[in-house]
Image 1 (tube, rainbow, N blue to C red):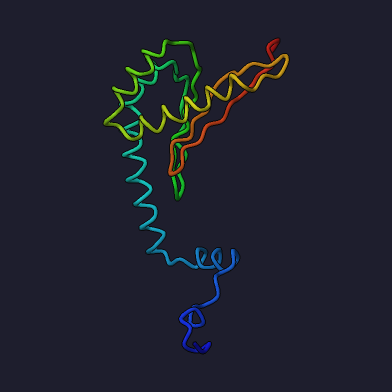
Image 2: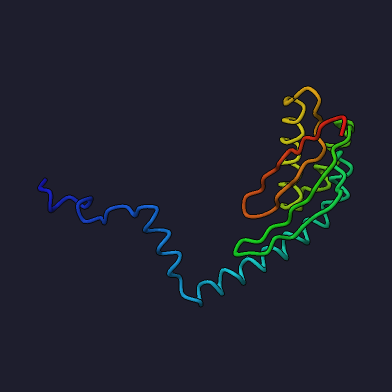
Length: 150
C-alpha cells in the first residue's frame, strides 16, 4: 500500500493545547450564550437534586453547615459538611432514599470516599474540620483540617 493510499496520511495533525485554547477563546458570542444557557439549566437541575438529597445525606452522617453557588461557564454548588458517626444501616437507607436522585447519589458517593480518606489521613494536632463538596460537572471533595487547639 502506498503512502497516499493510507487513510492515516489524510488526517490532520492533532491540535496542540495552545491551538485548542485559541479555538475556545475565539468562540463567537452565540456559542458562549449557548454554554451559559446550558450552565444555567444544569445548575437548576443540580440545585433541585441537591435540596432533595439533604435529608438522606444527614441520615448518612453528613450535616451541611453552609453552601455557596459559583456562577460561571460551568456553575457549581459548593456545600460544606461536618461528618458524624452513623450505622451502616443508616447509610444503606440513605442510599435507597437517593436511588432516583442522580445528584444525591453522586454527592453521597463523593462524601463517602472523602469520609473514608479523612479516617486514613492523620496529622498529629489536626482533625478534619469539614468536608467541602463541589457539585458541578465533575464532583469533587476537599477535606479541611484545623489545629485541634485552635
